[in-house]
Image (tube, rainbow, N blue to C red; front, side):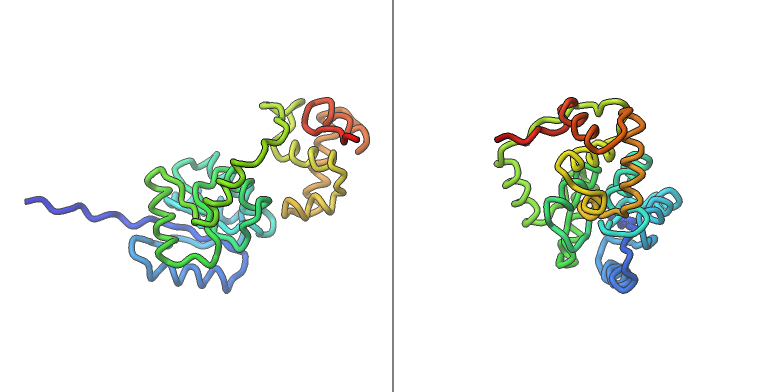
Length: 226
C-alpha cells in the first residue's frame, strides 16, 4: 500500500511598495493551502536581494515600485536566479504593463482583484512549467496575436545598446520627451536621462535629432509617411 506523497508548499516572496497592500497579500497567502511566505520586499532591489538570500520558488511581483520597478526586477531575477519564477500581481492590465513584464521573463500575470484560489493556481502553474495567466490576460494576449505585427526591430541592438536603451531610443524617435518616456516606462526622469546619455555615447551622436535619424537608419523606427 502506497501513500500519495505530500506536496511541498511553494515558497513565495511578495514584492509591493505599499505597506498595507503588501501586508494584506502576505496575510491572505498565509491562509492559502500550499503556500509558504518566506519574505516580503518593498521595492524591486529588495526583491532581488531576497531572492538571492532565500531562493524562493516564486515571487509575486508588483510592477510600479520605486528605485527598481517590477519589470527590471523580474529581468534581473530571471537572469541571475533562473530557479525562481515570477508571477506579476498588479493593479494594471494595460499593454504597457503586460508585455514588458512577460518579455522580462514573468511566467504569470494576475491583477489584484484575483482571488486566493486563482493565486494558488497561478503559482502551481508556473512551478509546473505552464503559464499562470488570468482569463482576462489570456484574452488580451489572443487579441494581440490577431493584430498586425509592428515593424521588426533588429534581433541584436546596434552599437552595444541594451534592450532598455533601445526601447528609450524608439520612444525618442516617436517624439516623446524624457518626462513622457519616464511616465510610459514607469521609471524616474533621472533614469531616462542616464539611458539617453548612454545612447548618445554608444551611438556617437550629439542630440535628439541625430538620435531620431539613427533610429530610422538602424531600423528601430519608421519615418512618418504622408
